Image (tube, rainbow, N blue to C red):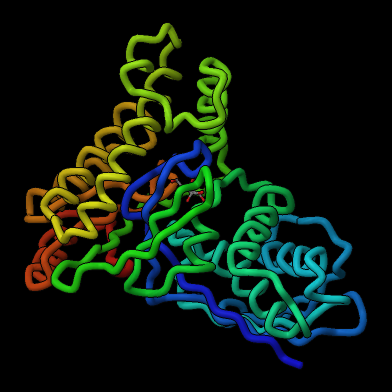
Length: 343
Ligand code: GLA
């Protein structure tokens, strides 16, 4: 039997680099996504066809990652097998509308969609969407060697377009919150590409681990910022911890602002988040700071770097009716930037 799975892309509205530090994050699902058809095979081969590449790839399920485009799919099938959703190999047909390398979780969405398709094809499968999200993170961390947190996988496994997910990454409890009708979150690519495997993401993770060891805690976000401010932790580790504790509080406040429709306050929190990522966590770049500044000057209510940083996208909050003119004016001043999508 053929199984089908779908997962959307995501943009993170606020709560950056705290999904591996016990914080609350607020990603939103996008209308772009990945759809997968999976047909189980009785041998141990994966046959992979996508609308992104003309060729079809064959690989054996026993193979390690080799650093090409087929790895995420093979890793997902291996994980499906480990979960008992698949006995042998599979034929995969993949269609994606998520721009790759833009920081919209195209890889998490692909892996989650494959796992969901395997669940759909299996008889009597009991894996929940949360189980699938956790398994998808294992594929990234253990098979692909990408040191990411749990945010992307949870968002794309559970949230639907038009919804944000307030996810407590310490307990994995979550709440879905509707996005406002009269505002848009617009995602603009800075023109500077980035990869989580380039080492800088890992460095930040190691710096956070050093802060955790100093305070003897698993949860940097639960620390009182005043305690971090007065600690004898060396720089820049102290500032990294400060970002986590303050970003977590901003994310919690943003969830409340979103629920009560206070988008002006949401914008203020986005701007504070950007400043913290720039000054304390140091994951921004001049080109991104300049794009954020233009976005605000031209009328955005809030704007910030989104995702892992060191390039990629900004997300800006704008009124519906101002959006088109705003976007054209911002892009005219930043020829390398481009509109990616909106939520
Ligand atoms: C990437 C990772 C996520 C998260 C963000 C930063 O998107 O995949 O787990 O850490 O960076 O918030």
